[in-house]
Image (cartoon, rainbow, N blue to C red):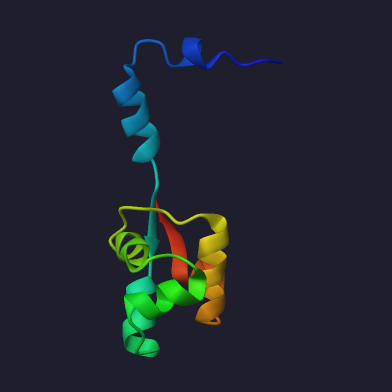
Length: 91
């Protein structure tokens, strides 16, 4: 059975569709709390350990960017905590 997304989303502009998809769920995280308070680590140090830039860590902390699964797992592994303990849905 094939689903025609155009027929489901008809009546909504592309911008409205993206807004609704983007704002349906928000991923919240405890990255800043972990690297600053628990491990006394800078954004740059964490970035080096998980193979991303300091800027990427900053936008993840701000909630402006959701990391890839690979990066999320690497961050959780560096702090030795479960993925759900550092990243969660804000419904």
